[in-house]
Image 1 (spheres, rainbow, N blue to C red):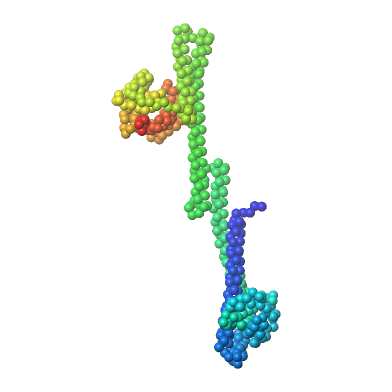
Image 2 (image 1 turned 120 degrees about the vertical axis):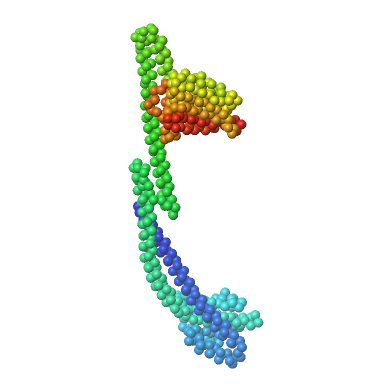
Length: 474
């Protein structure tokens, strides 16, 4: 059976209040009843002690007079008493009580208390005496021996009537309080349900695919904190969806780039092979055709290798073999390998490093880092310079590769490290294998060396890559 949360809240509040009022009423009624009986008992004890005290100082002739005087006084207070004497097991009543109720019988343990000088109090019930009465027996001991006492009995008038009146007032109070409590409970329950409903509707909106929803939040209570957590969850989902969309867009762009890059060399290779097979290429042009097939094949291999390298680095399959390397030697190798490409675009590679400058790195991966960045600089520089600088600072080896090329837009700087990203999409057919993976691989390799890489650029004035790799002594 489905019960709305609003009614659960309302019934729980009212139920708690009703139980609380009932318990309070019972406790208060019991307290008042005990207070009335205790008051009557204290009154009887006081009269009993006074009677015994006056009888103690009276001679036998005056005893009857004392008893009669007290009888007249207590009669007006609806109290009856009897003075008795004990001789062994015989009890003599000096003034029998004119009591129309059942005989008052003291039990053995009551007599035992009297012998030890303790008063006996009997709180009678309605079943035995047909009314509320209080019976008190006060012992009299002489020389440590129990010789008699006084028994007093009095109806306890008013407690039931008083309790009944109190209950009427309590009933009115309870009804008024329940009415007010009902309204407050309804209001509070309504507020809580509205807040929860708001989160429920927002969750339904998120389930339908809208991740821009927002609910009011606060630190006032758990529902407010739940709203805040819900908003954070939606924001993270929204960011994740944007990232997924970006990844999907980059994947599509990458597939388009790869397809384009592969289609061109494959078409060339296929055409040359068909020409050679069918003797459609003149003998003088065959060598040139074979050389073209070789170059296009190498382009395909570079594309595959870049993807494999990236995946190996991401899955921690690359194990570095670090050693001390003369940075000047590494720069010279880069210059030798790429000088022809640089000259082809009217550029000059300049080396600026001391012969003593060392770097603690994996030789092959260091060259891979430098080649990728230098190729990138050559690609976007024409008729300028590419400077390879190196020096030691604060226990780290610093490499700076500075070009005077076209530079990078400020909003593009942080994007160049993304996989598949290409700052200039119009240059997808460049001869250097720039498929949008090079700089992403570079950053991963630098991090594997526990290093850092950063880039600064100004549009139209050039770009500077700065690599910081700690020495092995650190």
